[in-house]
Each structure stands twice: as structure tokens, then as C-alpha cells.
Length: 329
Image 1 (cartoon, helix red, strand yellow):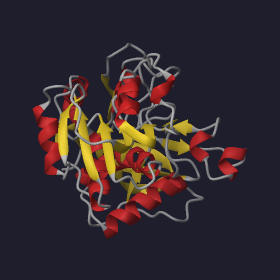
Image 2 (cartoon, one colour):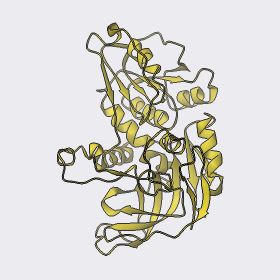
Image 3 (cartoon, rainbow, N blue to C red):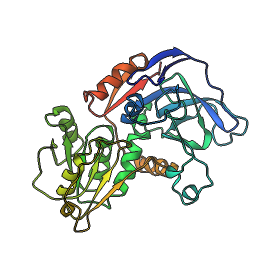
Image 4 (tube, rainbow, N blue to C red):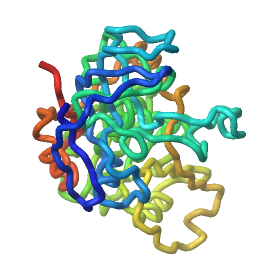
């Protein structure tokens, strides 16, 4: 099969012919239909996440059809359309796993980082770590939900039903979270790169009350803010924008250093919290919600062989919404 492989050369992917993987007893083999391109993929390829499995096939927002099942598989069958997320496996035995926090498992394995992912024609995944894709979603629409949607959903759940929500970094996760918040009656304030007209237009299209650059300030105080952009300098800005008792949630897996800031920005019971990975319960909850109140990602599709172009476009900030590789047809 053809696959794009990261071999440790910072910023570089190589198209290779590699063997089709064999599913283990509790795994399924998927024919990949689509795979989202996530900023986490950039962090892997650009060497910002340490200790990936080398070589590794990136990609962790996979939608595919089951074409073979392992001998012990009982809940998936050939022909099922399923999604694969960042969390590939957890130990199931540690205190985190037993308390429903498998996202914090120290022995966890991650798709496209420590386990081969979906920048390929085929991929294997653990049976119980796949999620059924509702028929109401196309494979293009579903792919960004499997990480951008999930991390956004988990981050949003930590904000406590805000009346006014700030979103810093209005990309794949941001425009999905905005739709959830607008459905819940919140006013959304989207902070983009200064001058990013496309991202600001997308924010208005999905219902944002206000959209502007991070150097601008809306006329209201925010109940909560989520930072998706990997820019530590946004943390003091967001803390300064939220009201007393407000929360700032950090939704990225990697961020530049946070500059020092005065305690007054955190005082008055403001809180600062990070989100790490997602759980299978998050996936079930998000897709159940979407079946009740649809969320439609804004997608730019790239044929599989144009994967490097998608990566470069995301790195340069040229893609509004989500980038998705397609292997269908």
C-alpha cells in the first residue's frame, strides 16, 4: 500500500510503498476513506512532540471501512464504517483508566504518533477504540470530528455553560466548538490571526457574534475562553478578557512558553486548565449529540497524493476550517 511516512527528518514526509498491516486478534483492518489533517500531525512532523515511533505513519482522524477482523473481534464486522481517534490503546488497569480518565494513562498508545495512523491506504485499529460513524455524516464531514471535534467537545465541557465564549485560534476545532456553543445559546467571540479574513468569515458563517484579531478586544467580558492556537502569549490575553470566576481552557497538545503575568489576571477565582487527549466516552457523547443537533465541519478536501500540500497549507494558516485527505473512489 502507499503511505506517507515520517522518519524523524523534521518537517518531511516520504511517500513509500509499505506492507498492508495485519490486524491482531482484537483489531480490525480498515480501508481508509478519509483522514483529517490535524495540528497535532504538524507537531509530530515538525519535531515539536518528542519520542514518536520512528518510522511512523501520521494521521489520527481516520474514517474507514472494516475489511478484515481479528479472531477475537465481536462488535465490528466487515463493511462497518468506523472512525479512529488519537487514543489508540490504554492499559485499562491503572488508576486513571479505572476512574474513567483513560486519556491520562501513562501506558497509552496514540494513533499516528506511537502507532501507525491514517496517512495511508489501510490502517489497523483496536476494535474497542473505534467509533461507529452515523449515517447522517459523510466520511469527509466525520473525519475532523475525530480529534478537532473531540478535543473541542472536551474543552467546551470544562467551560460550564458560558453565556459568552471566547475561542482563540479559529481553525478546525474552533469552528466545530462554535457550532456547539451557538446551539446552546452562547455568544461566541472568535479570535483569529490578525488580518485572517477567511477565518473571521467562517466564524460569522457558523454563528459567531464577533470575530477579530487577537490584538482586538470585544466590548464584553467573556464567561470563558478556549485557546486552540499553540501560542503561549495568548494565555495572559485570555485571562485578561474573562470575567471574575471565568475559566481559560488550553486545548492544544503543544504550546509555546507562557510568558509571566501578574497574579491579578488569575485572581478573583479565574481558573486555567489544560485538556489532554480524549476518552472513548467523549467520542460516544459527541456523536450522540451530533445526531440530535447536527454539526457540519467546513472541509477543504485534498486527494491523498497531495498530503504534503495539505500539511503546508495548515502550517501556513491558509486553510479555513478543516483539511481532510480523501482516498475514496
